[in-house]
Image (cartoon, rainbow, N blue to C red; front, top):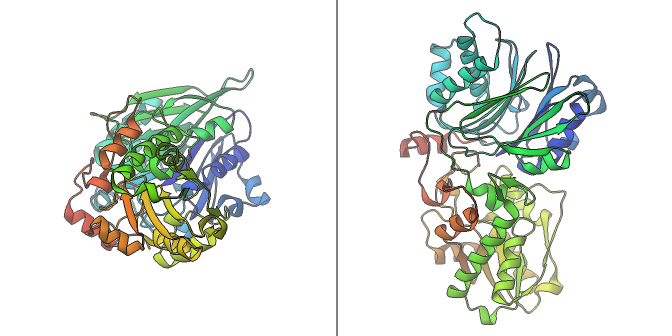
Length: 485
């Protein structure tokens, strides 16, 4: 999971990209990068850490031009601690290209060999984004055939790229001297949305970003989602071209975006994230009513912030008082996306504080968006008991996460997943809860898709069914032993 943005503007773009990345900060806190283009020159600045820490005034002054892109990174492949793994990645031929990418490629072993043997290209990191930009560059070189660059050249290159690359990818590239190219994998697993605004007599300004909230906050009108397999090219002058570049595109967006990753004020693939989370709460309430002693529960409490809509609906539907018992320190990053179990455990108590006045002597029902490794859940249950809770019923708005996620979320190690190989009562004992209730898989799917034109979801981490390429047991074992540190 990462956040990406690309802008074609009539005015300097550096501050616009910076502001957009600040809005996408929830999608990654490991590193950040901005690239801009003025005429033929590309300007790049990358840094570890968050957006507010990564750019000084002198850095921003070097990012000249009216075309730019940016990235916030949450490492799923490569080393999160190495600045050279930060995006964007650059290649100098053809034209000069910088690229940012949200997703995870699943045929990196084959691509590494192809790029060395067939394309004669050297990779300097273990990042699959560096692979992606090199595949794009090779295919652009093949597509131009001595002619000058056109939108058709870009579309031919993306068509060839789709044939070579497997996995999830939403990508944005600046092609020096020409414009911005954005494209999405043939299954549309990771999100990408297009926006436009009028710039007076100058014409249209354009933006592509991971989430719709960036467009709305920046004064752009939402045009539409980039389609699965589609490529969009926007020239320096603001002319937009688009073409479907995949042979059999099929929209199968990631369910975890709606459960946890995206901000609630975003709309993805025509589905409101906030409304989907409300519906997840409705479905979860029905399951709780079947399996938990609801007549003895005193209060319903969310784990802020992403579980709040679901918890509100659980309380309303069950007729139980809703209370906010956990106070969140907003200056600590999201614990799920922090590298390492020890760091996650330490950060839970830095991030959340249980208020004794809300817990003392009460039977509490806690609603979280999901349970992945169980580290956070175990700490939360312990905090509730220390604050005086008589009993703790823990519930998850998502089903048990039993399988690795290979499409851009850091869940590569099956052994780290608390639900892997355990029954629900065993998981309850593992996290210390008196009762544990999960959302049903079908209920999650129905809640997210209700009222939309989308018919499928990637639910691989819940079901073990992978939609792309050859995600075999052998591949999963290889990923587990080569996961990001």
